[in-house]
Image 1 (cartoon, rainbow, N blue to C red):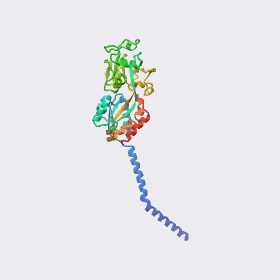
Image 2: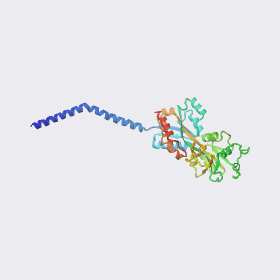
Image 3: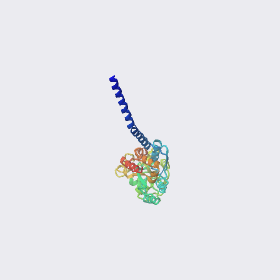
Image 4: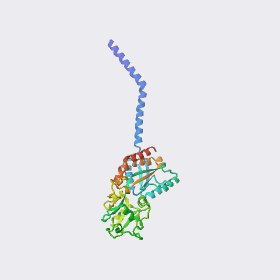
Length: 341
């Protein structure tokens, strides 16, 4: 009997303790659970936001293959609700659209000019604050000839410059291969290149030719595909454009090896670089971002961050004929854009 009373007393005390614990702490126990769930949902939403919108890019034909590839990867793998439209009007033509605010990004195969920066200011955009400059990669200016040309496979930088300068050899601007080297054919050289809309033309004219008049017989074109076709069909033709276009047309063209003073160098991803053997014809390529648009439109900012992320230019540069920049450069750009959030 005594044991039964003791057992009953113990059970009664246990029930009272359980009841008090439940009454005193049940509400508090639910709050952390709710907060944890809300935090997880918020984090998941922040990391996997599905965006919608349109991003407009135009400018350099040289940069076009790289930027178009980045845009394709972004729309397929990152944000299929965002449409990224990439044009190739040319560097100068791109800036003419970018300055008045028609574009989110302007690609360029040369740096923005002082007069273009002044144009931005007139339109209320301060360069470095409202417009960011990003180097995307390094390109190697490439001299290309027909597969049928068996003699001009190697040339010095000085020979390239002399042959493209107006009246270097005679008053009528007619230049023969034999004018370059006596043992070469006595046939007229057909000069080609991109027109004034392209940063590649400006780089060649301003940096390589030092702003000296180019031969008047040079046939300058808007479309790089036209240049490829013209040169591939004429053994006396020579043209200049970005390494990427050569890489994609090696079945039709051959690159001239350039001697910068230490032997002929073939343009490759291993030789193109500011401190590498092909440095004499190496140049950076750029994209310019309208920061105001990036602040206003999450899709523009998100795409900008993808461009400079490890999945963007850093990964895709080589596949499109460009030498990538050091990882630290892209990381610095990424942090600069993160600060806009």
